[in-house]
Image (cartoon, rainbow, N blue to C red; front, side, top):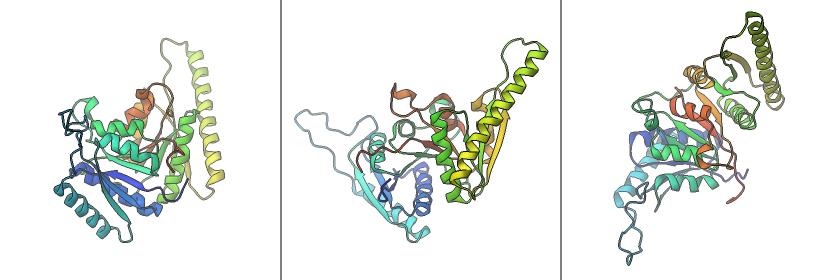
Length: 296
């Protein structure tokens, strides 16, 4: 991966985006990368583009937005000496702008609206678009009223799949960067339907052995690459992987989830467990989209 990839954050002046900018600054400093603060100044649905078919011009960025970006950059540099910041306004919807920026980024950071209201509205449309469709890892952060976690482990789920494996590797890199423990979790769900006691005990033992094997294999691979990293193997039992991992995220500084790559239906880039964690986790969530070579 080229060393010139920046950390990118979208800022519109809202408290949510300012919280995202603070997380992005910390990430840029930890990676020794520049920070690009971007403002996509057209409405997410394209409003602001002239409706007159004879007037094909695109609105110019406003002076107010320029001042807002410069103030955000100055405050970040003041809090993080040595941080290199570039600000830019882009004539596009914020979601589309950040997805395009992700082609050349190491990390994109977006803010969520928090846990409240209707389930489908926990993330704003921009955050949801970027978390689903970015071309590099995406960090989804909690609202300003929820403190930024400083200490705590990095959490990743293990299920033997390729997306989970990508998430575990990215989680290990983050744990090393943060000098934190890496907690690998595998969730066993209960057997459905009536099962004879002997069969139930046998199935439980088999499930426990499979869980231990998955965790041990994942931990061994990580310890080979990161021998000084403290890796904790934690089998869990819950009604669903989503529920168990969301509950476990309450003790973590970061949870890392996988994505399914860019094949198939666009809406299925995140699996159901990853979507649930992005929506409901109690800490920031890092979505492990693989890097794409195009645009470097």
